[in-house]
Amino acid sequence: MASFDPETRNLIDGKLVPASNGAQFENINPATEEVIGVAADGTPDDMEVAIAAARRAFDETSWSTDHEFRKHCLEQLNAALDEAREDLRQIVVAEAGSPIMITYQVQVDSYIDSMPYWSDLATSYTYESPMSDIEFMGNTQARIIRREAVGVVGAITPWNFPLYLNLAKIGPALAAGNTLILKPAPDTPWSATHLGKLVSEKTDIPAGVLNIVASSDHGVGAMLSTDPRVDLVTFTGSTATGRAVMQAASATVKKTFLELGGKSATIILDDIDIDAAAPMAGIAVCTHAGQGCAIQTRTLLPRARYEEGIEKIAATMSSVNYGDPLDPSNLMGPVVSKKQQERVLSYIEQGKQAGARVVVGGGTPAHLEKGYFIEPTLLADVDPDSVVAQEEIFGPVLCVIPYEDEADAIRIANNSMYGLSGAIWSGDTERALSVARKIRTGTLSVNGAQWFDVDTPFGGYRQSGVGRENGLAGFEEYLETKVIALPK
Ligand code: NAD
Image (tube, rainbow, N blue to C red; front, side, top):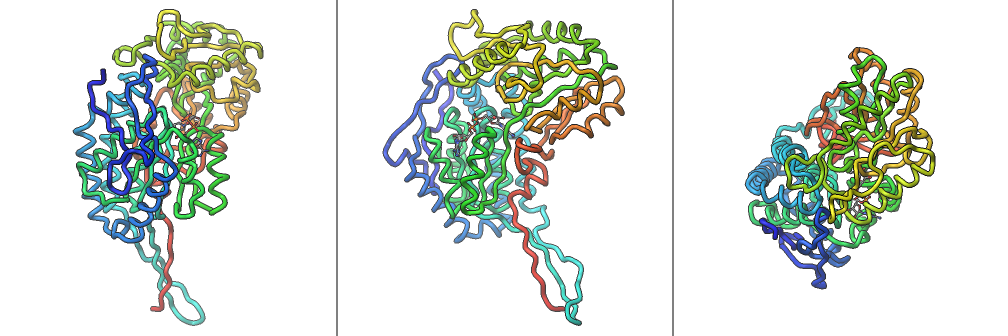
């Protein structure tokens, strides 16, 4: 039995409502395979009402121009999130199968604690400033540059870090003065609907400013990419779906902001203490069962130290604690669904068929009878052009690839359609930095240093996305630019 009381209704035009046809869909705990409850199964009619409400709230209220009021409302939301923290933690663990260990970091706590960054920006940001004067046909003209909310934002999110990713869209979009419709992943509805309850009961956010429409039907979310009343669609999810969103949004030339997949590489240079570096590569891929877009899922080892490196990574991956996500010593729980479990297992099979050597794991754990678990899996001798080295597996599966020299390592790291993240380990920080400058990705870590924070612009090169989430750059994704010229 759940010890928390999740909200099952959608928030549409200021009201918590069931689906228009009364339908509900089941929420399944991936660690137990049990149905833990239901959520309103939002319909196209519900989405239609939500879009109309968001449009009206943007066009007919002072939400976009009253910066002080927005700050006040968002501060109420911050306080409500703080109060609801333990419920939200239980929800994320139960519906996403997230190990509770990481809920004390970005999955729940660190992002709730970061929310004042957005509420403060509502008033501290300079929305209007003078530019230099220009001469035009013998007259001097003044110019003003203004940043204004884009309008109605459609936000579509995945299940792996559901609360964080919902807040990472709600925070900046609302702080910048937009109205928003959030369509969460069907696997994790409560991490969104519960926010609707907080907004409705604990804040003065006006009706229509924030709408939350959970649905088991991807098509309901797809309406956000096509509807002409939506000005911007912000999407986090797989690259395949990101392409569909971008294509659908093109008919109305909608602004699109995409945070997509990754296949990031760890480069272990030949001058590092391999005892220190190699275990970290194993730990990274097991965190939350590898279900993180920025997790490094390829490890590049110098040929001369290849077997030694594999041995160290294997030792770490063989001893990782995993199982019940509520056990605080577990680094990984299950993957999110039966479908994902089958997908990950099929990738492991493809890897084997393409000649990869299974050093650790390779299947489902015998000791866990229930739940969509996958063994921590280490694939060695992976061809850098093969499917498992190129495609995002989204499971605890690490591909190890040997390289000949530094230039070869950089070439293999960059041999990807993705460009989200990466890690470099070296005994010489300057050398690591020079390699980091040559890797085509949005974020990089040297010797385990951490880049993630609410003020860090995060996003991808190439097919890992368009735009940046978080930081000032992330805030400005939700603003238009207007220049007004006037006679002096
Ligand atoms: P997904 O692409 O299957 O689904 C994401 C969301 O899109 C869900 O809400 C889903 O209902 C919706 N959706 C599906 N089809 C749609 C369509 N045609 N139009 C509009 N919406 C549609 O992704 P997922 O499996 O839920 O999440 C895992 C993926 O997310 C991975 O690829 C991961 O790398 C990526 N991700 C990226 C980031 C980032 O910031 N770059 C962060 C987390 C996850």
